[in-house]
Image (cartoon, rainbow, N blue to C red; front, side, top):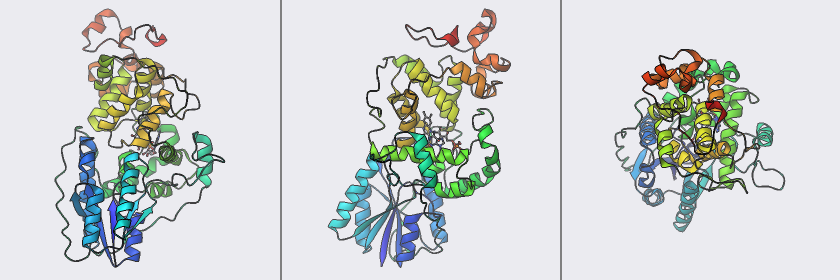
Length: 437
Ligand code: FAD
């Protein structure tokens, strides 16, 4: 008896429910990844990370006697073709929420049934499955706090060990895994399950201080596990189990992740349509300001620092994401959708649910119960980068300015300001923000 396990964004052997179930119920298992040309061009950074993760997954499966079979093309057609070739009874797949993933899932089910095979969906992309906790009278939670309360008490599945043996049917060509493409960011973290496990282990001693340090931009002490969670190199359930405190502030952040997945499952157009009914959307058209923001030359040091970190590392500190997104939408008055696209191009952890969900939250079109809150970038900078060390790291043109004065170079005496190779803050017609006065 044979089954195919189609990997998508669950690139691990530990706590991989689809793989574990197939290995315990079937004699032969074909772990498959289909390189989908429709997704290939979205982000060079993520393509590189993906290929590194696939190479590691292949090694992990080989150590267990199996292999990762790699194909290129339409994932549905390739999966069905291979499943038929090996005489599989069925296909296992982790359930996912994006519009693209749901369509792929639907087509796969139809094709599998047409060929008398079953398609079985498994949990594992989130901790609590989207849709499994619902408010009375609704299909999903719109506000985080009540979701978090229910989420903490929700039933959870058991964490699963990696299968000891994976037996591939005879005569399957594993296919070639192309070398990782070059990413765009020189300092991007490498992908893979073992890198992720090491990162988690190294970071865990910091966990007890998470509440105090997670907003310290220069300290940079958050887990940086987001890309590994994005590609499923780590199971979110396993991460939460290691953290061991389901009521603590770190697991609460993992709950935010689940929160946006259940929002996306219910509102799949999250990346393009305002979530909040009646949200005002009167954005300015200003391509030059958008370019300056994208390239990290707005003249607002904390914003430029964040955008430059994004380009250099394919990752940005959460506080910097809030500040840069708030600056684009609430100060420059520009649409959040290009913001989503710019982040999506660079972020290793970029995904529809978290990227769009957070952007909409900041822009005031999303799940924030206080949609009109503003982000004063100077006040934010003085609070979360009090000595200016984060700005100094990413905006070296300003490195000579001592202390928190670095956050407002426009206040320097004319002479000193002229010596800086740094632009004045972008002006928005018709506004006179207090922080520039
Ligand atoms: P930690 O602080 O160590 O948190 C642990 C984990 O919790 C993270 O790895 C992540 O999986 C989850 N998490 C933390 N904060 C959030 C949050 N606000 N929303 C959802 N999950 C969260 N996160 C993404 O994973 N992908 C994105 O595309 C993404 N886009 C964002 C866009 C904007 C405008 C903003 C404001 C935030 C975005 N985030 C996104 C959320 C957050 O910034 C990152 O998850 C976090 O910075 C990752 O760093 P970390 O792993 O060190 O986080």
